[in-house]
Image (cartoon, rainbow, N blue to C red; front, side, top):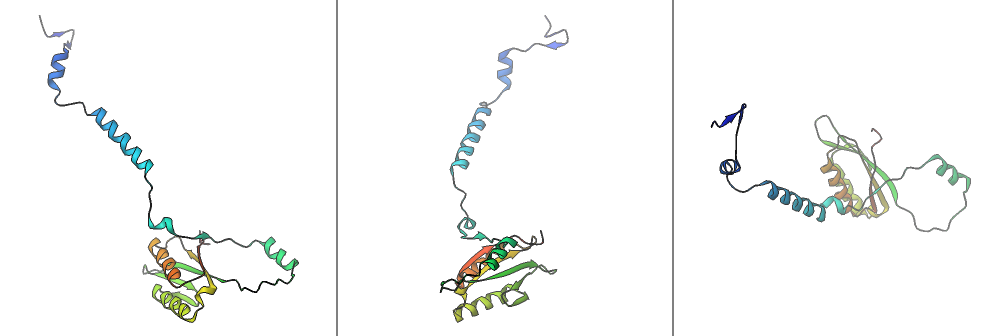
Length: 166
């Protein structure tokens, strides 16, 4: 009797099992993937960025400005609110981050550190609220560096705003 009939070769289960070496890996890989997904979903991805106490700056609409002009009633609020200052960050042609605002025009990050140090020494840092407005090409690490410098200087509040150039 020939092993080949009608162009097909006969195989039996013992021949197939003899060719296969080792355990079947498919169920083990499935279980490992399920466990991996379980631990990824159950863990918290905590990075330093999660602890930034920052809010998005709110824009003033025309109706807000009109309402203030229409109701000029005096208030007895003796506390002077912090002054808002916008720091615009952009990347120059040489790749360095440049700062505009808080008395700086196209200054470096070192110039900003010096300005913030001076405001802290004068006691004026607590009367400033800074809004950081990075352009889309600005490095994220420079935005965080400016944020940290403002926090260390004792600025009253730091917020992030979307760039107007978007």
